[in-house]
Length: 146
Image (cartoon, rainbow, N blue to C red; front, side, top):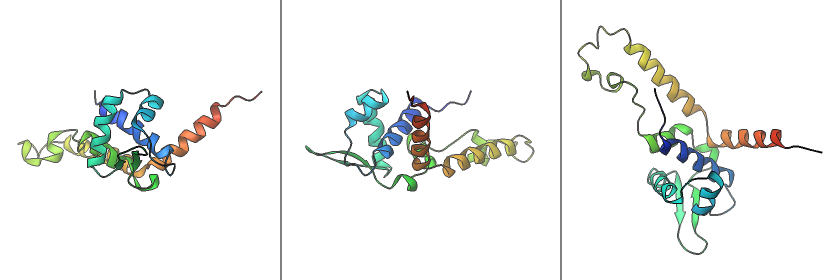
């Protein structure tokens, strides 16, 4: 079974949280952890990875915290996924044609390549802003009025 790791899932949630609070100043890690119900220690590791990838900025001090490095509409999910999970490698022969001696006669390689391209395309076509907008719609739908 293909699975996205906890690192990828939790990191994506943290990025959506930062995007939701974009423009509202620095966000404390403990606040993200509380809202997303994540371990603050684990979240710290994820945010450092995202910072190293240039997706998150941090500021120390009394008014410190974390912010997105760019506007939510300028960060696509592919960037986040690659920072947290590394390159999408479904089958070794897709990324390294020398990995398999059957490359010229393999009828399934094209399927794996197409699958990788499809996943990459979906992630590249969605931005953090898209997810924030969807979240706002979901919250609006779930409101109960008397």
